[in-house]
Length: 80
Image (cartoon, rainbow, N blue to C red; front, top):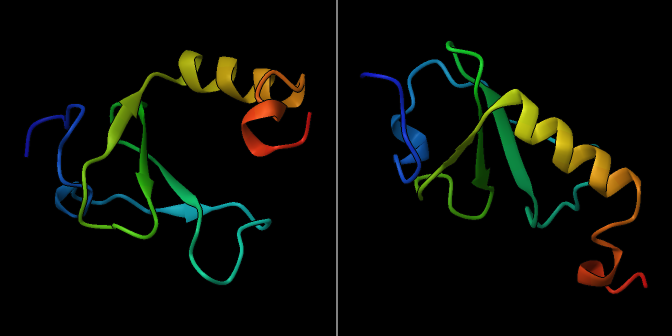
């Protein structure tokens, strides 16, 4: 397969080692991430592992993680 693009079936991304946060609950309600061979990061819904993946650059993931650390999304989780 060529480099995956947004919407590629997550289960079709060859060699992806999906991982999730230790904070994920046992019901599988979480997102999973995998570093791809070209350095991008794929994201999928753990409840739909054969569904579409979103592909981000490392810079985009870093900006999201920093925003989460800064509390930018707390309202989305009902924390604000």
